[in-house]
Length: 145
Image 1 (cartoon, helix red, strand yellow):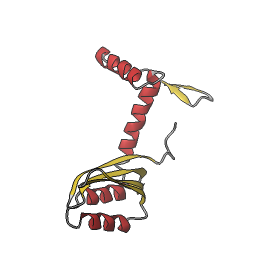
Image 2 (tube, one colour):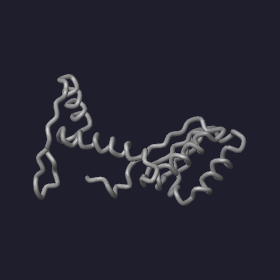
Image 3 (cartoon, helix red, strand yellow):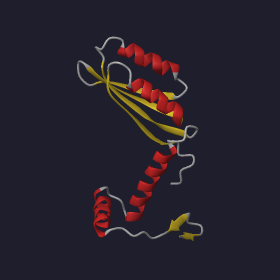
Image 4 (cartoon, helix red, strand yellow):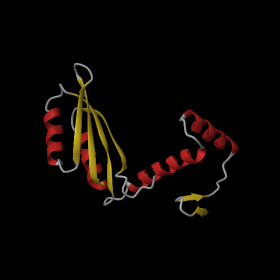
């Protein structure tokens, strides 16, 4: 690995099967990257973030997405109670009425990975939730640009 002084850039080479290299090239163009290096850096960054979320004391940020039928008895009360119990981690919410029955709720979260995972699991498992997903990212503190 070669590091360039002052640039904060490390240069290294990799070998890929030709078919995978062609797919990388195509994806790089389709996503509008200036070059392969930026595309590969974003993929590595995404995997580093995913890896870090597995550590319970690592601080993460992210969203919890919930889809539910608001006519299901007590679903809104249950979800609100869970959210109020974790107000220190849930930093913002967005509630959208998709149709006369279905609601989409997005919760922005920030805190310890294990706590956020536990809250997401509790919300997603609530009776009446049709679908839920936790999406995590970094707080940006320990992530180079």
